[in-house]
Length: 231
Image 1 (cartoon, rainbow, N blue to C red):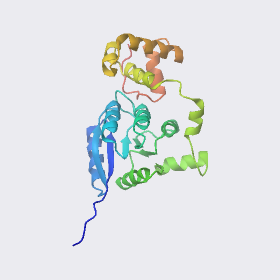
Image 2 (cartoon, rainbow, N blue to C red):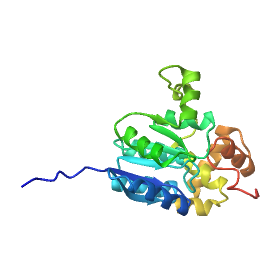
Image 3 (cartoon, rainbow, N blue to C red):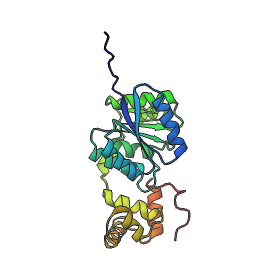
Image 4 (tube, one colour):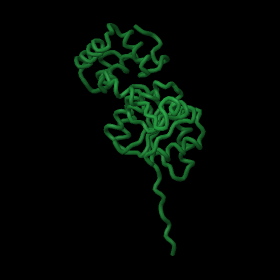
């Protein structure tokens, strides 16, 4: 009697705030026999929680995520779930975004125009411990950094000015949430939120909410379309 060996599938967590895109990604990946989508997250905060709970091999992460952006979610996931590999899937091809996520430790960066074949190949490669970039990004990195690109090196040397908590508070403020709403979302006191807000303004030499919002947009923490009206 022949024994059938069970194939150990690559477990994937999808972090994407658009339901139709997320459903499409699930269908594409689960069409591959060796990949299993074990969870879906609509916000960056939910992605961090699910990553801790499910311990996926690979997290496919969009950058523009509500409540907690994909950059900060990536940092938190890699800190708390060191075995996970994060693969960024984004509409943005800017070098600044690529540098930020590689500095944080993301294993790859794909554009949303990527074909299903390339996406599944990228998931397999990063799960093996390799890096994987969309061809157009890989060519740019090759030109800028040579045979062994490390676009995150310059960012790492600069250091991170804001703490993880400060980035969380900044994003929520920039998304238009009041101090009380930020406090509820993060599970901290209003007084603590006020202290973080004050510290942000001191660190960034910014004196009002509109300035914090502009900084968050410029830094890629939120998209410009998130905040339509600045009070």
